[in-house]
Image (cartoon, rainbow, N blue to C red):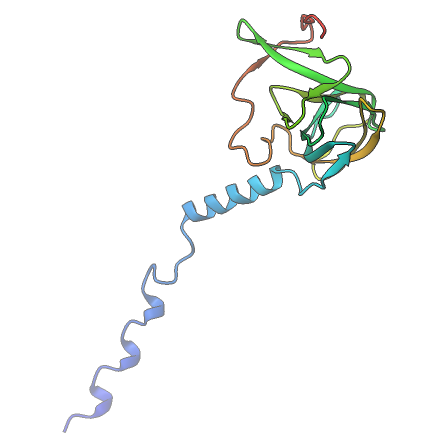
Length: 201
């Protein structure tokens, strides 16, 4: 009778754990998607607080980081007027810059131009105005230090009725889109240092 030892051993059979690909590392595509997802989370601004100044509700304040040596920066927010009369909102001051104010971007022959909005942005009763890249924004001039991703920018905003409120703007990465937006500024061109001023409002 043949010995049991002569039979092929079960130990010699390929193991499930030895089959290629069964317990292989995640595909490179999955790793790349995970990396992109993490990058998107880091680029997006942190959750921001909501603020109220008179009849104006301020939501989703945020700002963009600036490169080293930049003298200007920008911040954004959404403003809703829940009152019965037209209000204006402006920036009074910020410890991060020499001056701050509301500016407007407009396209002229395919080139973006910027101008200050005298008296601040106007919000009519029941209206919601969003300050965002490529449109109305809060302009910071004479930055005292670069705006860094993950920090908060502080600014004091004032309304046309004389009320004021301190707002913190979470700082997102350079070029980050607005919260909930899919992309950046839509590829619109900015005019260089010799930007031609537009007629003030």
